[in-house]
Length: 280
Image (cartoon, rainbow, N blue to C red; front, side):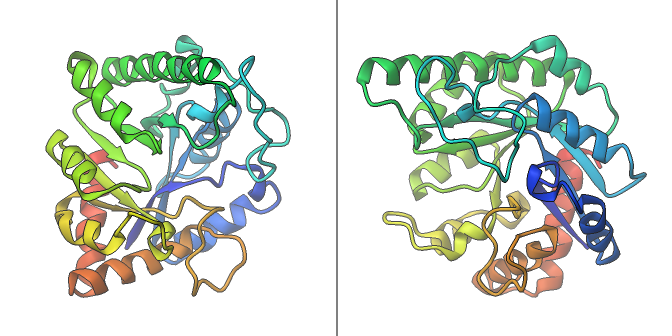
């Protein structure tokens, strides 16, 4: 058994065949957590999860890139949604209501993203501040509900680490660094915080300054989670053009190779990790 702890079958890319993809995944003994990026996709994740008695779960939250309204324009990702632009606010009570579903196992994905940024320094600071404000509200919600948090962080580890250090009173007890892309020092800081570390298909890419094999070696097996981030980041040997939870086995195989362990052991321990963290 494998658990894809970060999928997006709630996205527009699966508008015609989400149930078919889910059935194929479950038939192959792969469970999944569909993660929200804003109100529309969070609601959809819950609706999908509630259709299945077991093996399909949801997380609800606001991705930082959806906070660009009034600051700068970001091209809409049609794989994600065709109904909304990249503009979003965080309605605490709305997300709290969504999270009442027994199928909601986390808040997220939330965090910081400095990849897309406005052209002026002044607007960049406004954007960073807006991300921080919404991030802290989501931490408060997670703490109130006793749920773990799924963190998205791109080109912003220094700020995320600083803000978590300064706001320890609202830090949740359980957290995961989704799709971790950072250096060994940042990795160690997250491990010191008690984070689980999510690895997905990006580990097959070459990124300057990042050593994915070293990061995987340094991450204790009991802290590793498997992800696809589908429909994105399909592993190079995956036979389908659009990634889906079936791609998680390639992540497991790569980690097994790096850790010099069997695929069975990786599957067993990462599944135990996911069940423990998300209480599924």
